[in-house]
Image 1: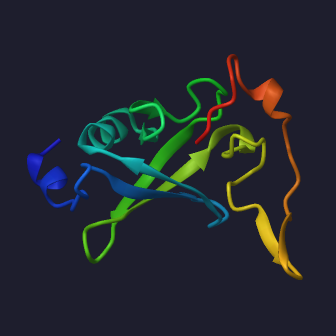
Image 2: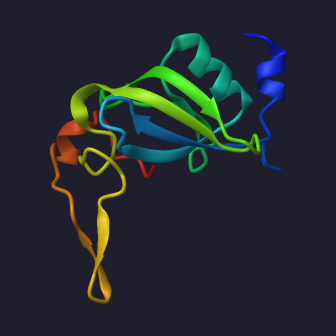
Length: 134
């Protein structure tokens, strides 16, 4: 991968850039995660979403435990160069560690948050080890 691709991205002081994953078929925003330069390089090389886990301090290949990988279809850089949009094919239909199709399942009702989206797969069935905090 040409160094100019990585050099065009404005990483923050911690060396990270927000990466929004969007379902290429439905247009649904699936999740927000972060990438460092290595994660971006791996994503482009492997053609699947690879993020940097801030809580674990290491690279995280989406679906490495659950099997619900995100196949990369397209990647975009915003006008300021500081946010990535990954258009992906979500394998397995579950992007969220809670077992939902996407991470934006909470909505406001009256004065509080409620779960507006159903659990598709019980999180205990998704992971071979403990459920990640992503």
